[in-house]
Length: 303
Image (tube, rainbow, N blue to C red; front, side):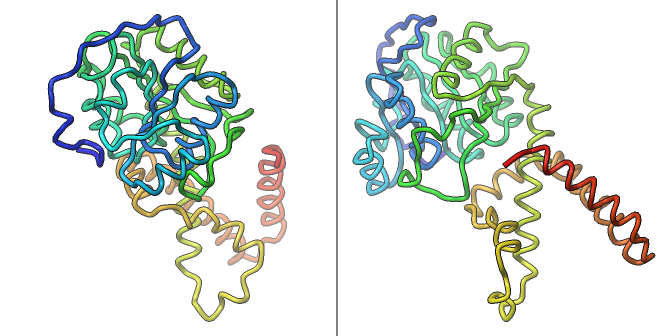
């Protein structure tokens, strides 16, 4: 079970309330894991008048108090049950290896009509573990906002973190279309652009665009001899910045998305071999072509 699944979570569920599934004005929004992403959701929801009350769930009292003092949440809990009972929307912003257990623990206590979602960087294993296992009237739709940084904690949260950033929503053939529309409206209300992708397509894409870059940054940081540290300038530091991310979080991501990451690693090693071969051959014309093509791709991404 996840870190918030205390024995109290196995108590009988309280009577459920029913909410209007078509309403996007949220009376109670509960955020499980109030760090950078969870804190930013709370700040954005309050700044935009989307939620009347925002509750936070976590393990660390000091961190939860910081989130409250910063205005990201109105009240906090250690236990899921009281925090989700009145929530129309519950967002799980915890590590990917904890989300499914937490969703299943919370769902029986949720109101009839409650919508559950997450912010995890993998989708396939999470959705497979949840789908078909929730009580009637409670729906989970997987989400992944492509925002954030290597920093942790609510003190790094930003109300505009999701503005003009893409959020991927990952429904399956079994997902209620009305729930998809509700979660789309939620992320759009936070300022995000939205794209729908299957869990499998999401995980293959993120292996290349997010998970592989993290491993590359870690590998580059890992080969730096300590005696050369003072010779690193902005190039090395910019390239390895994301290696400062939480190792435990990234270990869980790699476990969840191992197969897709291995495919992405093969693509990278094949491309690195091209650079190796042209350097060994002294084929400067081909090296120039490789460098030009890489620059075109990066320039097209913008700042």
